[in-house]
Image: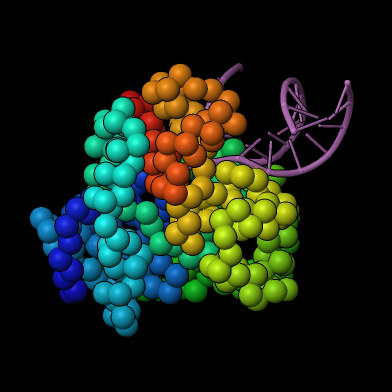
Length: 278
DNA sequence: TGCCAGGCCTTCC
DNA sequence: GGAAGGCATGGC
């Protein structure tokens, strides 16, 4: 069992705030999460993170990177609050929330599925696709399935995807899988591209608009200067600033949060989803 | 039942 | 370039 000393880390919020689709909450309040190449179980007790996995190779660095534990979020939150004190309540409700460092292919497909969909439905579709095509892993007497590789999805048709409740997004998934298989550098290229260029490139693909592209860049490429504006963020923006309309919201976010707009908006998403669903 | 969900596409002006 | 309507599916 690996132990990692952490501070300023809220495991619950980080896992459940809508950026991770493949997790299970266990009876002991730990989380079992399926990563790219392994399954981990994480539990936090005070300032220690206990990590177990079926694969211990580089486990600490994998976990630190996945939860973005090396970044100074206190500093980022100060910058956000310096720009707008009225977000005190929003930022305060997200103390210790980290931006996940996910995997480009899985993230891209997952967020194509996310369009006009609910978090619980997205989770189910991603799980079903993984079960159908991904590698099987045994961990703690249970069976898990990794998200499939592009090659494993190579011959899957749009009609096949319909079996996994993805609806009209079937053809978008098929297209993206083909793009990635035809150009093995396609997804890696975004690491070195500026945010605006990455957005333009991603939005050339079917089923990817500004919102989906922003989420992909935020959660898989750590590009924080994006604006993933969804229905919850709109509610908070209306509530906090009395601002409506996507264009106006974007303008406000850019003005106030600048390079950290993606994080500020994730905070609003988390805050809004909790506030308006209770 | 009807409305909504981490929206995007097509059509039409 | 912007507004309006359609879209699969599951949850509430």
